[in-house]
Length: 99
Image (cartoon, rainbow, N blue to C red; front, side, top):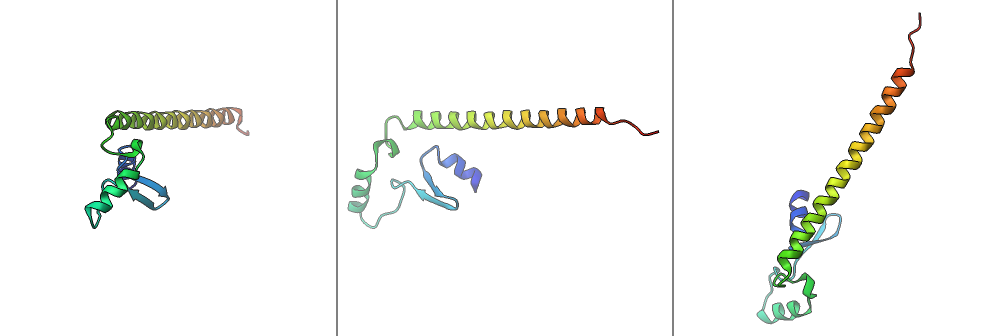
């Protein structure tokens, strides 16, 4: 579920409100009357609309930013693992056998 949401958020199809709660884009929601749909769509900010002319470009930009964020997290984890390994190797090197 989380993996699917990570793909739907940059596409602005859903918005995470808080842990375990997501809101569907109002342009995708079901309405009882066409008037309700029109009234809701009129108040949606232009940037959040799916028919915005910059929608595809903003989606690709959001995906790229997310991928950059993941790459940075991987680098930090790798650096932390290397530092732990170096500390363990140093500790092992200082140990001596007892005769």
